[in-house]
Length: 398
Image 1 (tube, rainbow, N blue to C red):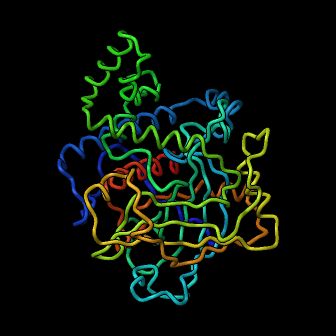
Image 2: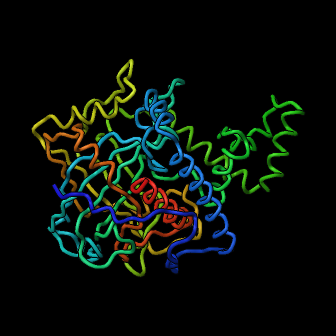
């Protein structure tokens, strides 16, 4: 098993590090506004991280009694880990020439890799909350020692990361929506539901006082009619996530959601799909707080390897919404997924030892650990570059 890259990150700040190369597929109406919003989001994140770093030993001890993982600095997104597993990422030996781009240019080549399964929750909490709601799940693949230059070094190493979630689109369309939500902890007493307040305006049950409060919020945040539609889309996606049960991280498909380049004149989204059904297929009742981790551990006690097919969805005819709106889902009938690689997870393997858990926590994932042929594009990916850099710098050094 390859060791995680040496930790060479330096302390972080909200300031921009390096200019992001712009693709011809991207459309940024107001670059200055976008940079300002990203700066403000980064500043909020830095303040939260600095506050955590300033905790005394007694404060961290108090936190760890109720929330064991809260005593250490966690990731900004997908902080709850279900486990990291060793894997082999093998390019399809008979891959057609039109897909031999970047990592896929050597059919049959095998790469050692590691996969982190996770949940995206604001705090490390039970896999199903007290109200029975589920969260978004993640699968992050790190392919070690790729050939060629990369857009961003992975703690000094040339690795390719593929980050995915268990739905084909993101909850937020753009940087503006993400910025609006990120402001809530400091402006509305950490009540995320405030973000969806504009969706309630047409609710007949809303009294005059409540309507005025919503209108005031919309005025403060400069929310217009087009923004309401975007917020409503986010609300529907969140509802879908919260009502979709997952019994085993190994038993569902994962998607990049955001777009990436596929060479100079095409774009892609990618996905990982399990080759067979992995038990359990139903959420246990009652469920343990960490039932997803338990399912992962049990699945890796068998003697048969577990296999995912890695697929890409390719196109060259894209609109602005296809790239800049991260809630957009590409039509699979028009742009079908094509299998380009196989991910094999050996079994049995131990993922619950202190050494394995510590190694997992030392890993840093970002879509910008990538070959130039797979450059992340679109507003959400441009934002992720800054956020992931800051999160990793603080987490690995503080």
